[in-house]
Amino acid sequence: MTQELTSPTPARQSSGPGRGPRWWRDAVIYQVYVRSFADSDGDGVGDLRGVCERLPHLKDLGVDAVWLTPFYASPQADGGYDVADYRAVDPLFGDLQDADDLIRSAHEAGLRVIVDIVPNHTSDQHPWFQDPDLARTRYIFRPGKGANGELPPNDWESVFGGPAWTRTDRGDWYLHLFAPEQPDLDWDNPDVHAEFAAILRFWLDLGVDGFRIDVAHGMVKAPGLPDIGHGQQAKLIGTQVLPFFDQDGVHAIHRTWRRLLDSYDGDRIGVAEAWAPSAERLALYVRPDELHQAFNFQFLNADWHVDALRSVIDDSLAATASVGAPTTWVLSNHDVVRHTTRLGGSLDRARAATLLMLALPGSAYLYQGEELGLPEVTDLPDEVRQDPAFFRGGQGEFGIGAPRSGADTEPATDGPADPSGQDGFRDGCRVPLPWSGEHPPYGFGPGGSWLPQPADWRALTVAAQTGDPNSTLELYRSALALRRSLPGLGDGGMSWQPAPEGVLAFSRPGLLCTVNTLGRDVELPLPGQPLLSSAPARIDGGTAVLPGDSCIWWAI
Ligand code: GLC
Image (cartoon, rainbow, N blue to C red; front, side):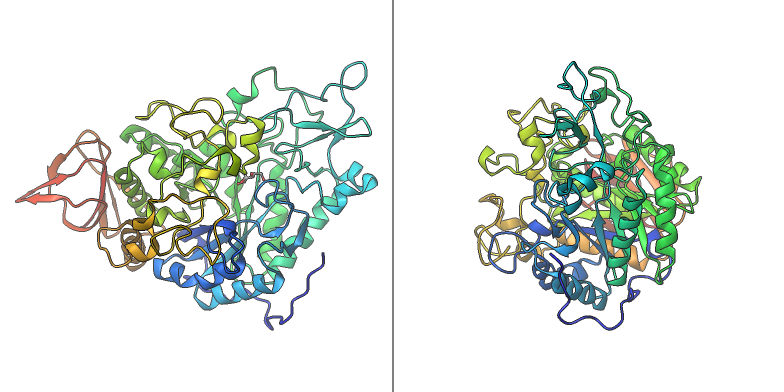
């Protein structure tokens, strides 16, 4: 599988675009889900050349960096999060030369590049797992329980549903917190540490600006692999430290990686995908000698209500401030229901939530397609589904992303039969992007698209929205341009201001932000001149009328 560069870039360095040192503290980072972004060769699957060709879109949007989801050699049992060779590009997505070209072109366009690294598990097709002698010490094998070892070694369940153990032909069992095709590595083995350090160096040498670390809270398991208790896991996940998630031992690994990142020029970063039970425990991942950022899923999961929003913002800022790190905000990604749909199926709310997020201090992550206001696709037929959780009867990624109790919509029910279609499974947010044209595949590529696109997306394409001042795309472009132009808006402080019931108001350097979370108009004394709004205020003398579910940035 070894791949070679055909025309190596001479200087293997981060070119250092973006906004200088500590660029990540307030960066807007755009997640490219490679297989659904743009397809250059007509096989219906997005690829690295497709990303390269569409870099102008990201430049026009005004983001600082791109995060590319895994494009490594993989059987694709979990959309590429099952890696068989960490140093090779899967032929579906191109080759190593394409990766090198993309990194170079992005840097030339002033965009930094973050790649995904998957250290908790490999593919079962990885050479280590394929070799029984190597596998025994580098993965987690245990004898089964029961008279004949016919029962799994403990009661852990896979995040995707079913037991977290699979029995081999040899009679023992191996651990997989995700699909059976994703065996968990044994991080007690120094060979695993050495191999991942070498993999990080490989990509850093190629010029990447950092890594999004998949399941960064999962690599270390509690000694003895203790049971959780029958039926307890689903209740405890996300609210408590579990024997396989958020163990204190993971921090030693992140410290080592930080030293490795710091040994390179150009502020290369590590971003934790860590599902910690509280903002305080999440902040441990971004202590000064650990990673730079951690996704703030508490914010993503907050209900559209002033109290919930205000408390999650306060908790997040306090927790990260306690360790001197910036906060990282996110509303959508490839694992959760798109926020247009999640927030009650309301594009108004989604636009308001985005403007709120972009007015907060810290860094923000955008997921491809949210700049078009794309909704979750909720009517995918079963036969096109690819999310392994769908086939294993899981509850979606850690049970998040589906509407939450207290939201306007009903919580998702078990399994794929939920009539709302918001089942928490992940294909509905991964439908390929619409770029132009009247019909599928809407310019996604010269062929079709690996998941069917809705017939009514023609008004949502990049081409259709460009130049329309009321479009969601132009709202994102304006917000990002303003964010860049207002010094001090990204990093730095905020202070809450008095506001009527149902409204959040806070000031930042150069602006005041109001968010009306109610579904109806609210009046307040005119706070300043409107700079940007998700829905325009009506101004009557000294009074401003905020439309329901709106966010407005006011010049002060
Ligand atoms: C992360 C990824 C998700 C993947 C899982 C297992 O949560 O975001 O897509 O399925 O890890 O690698």
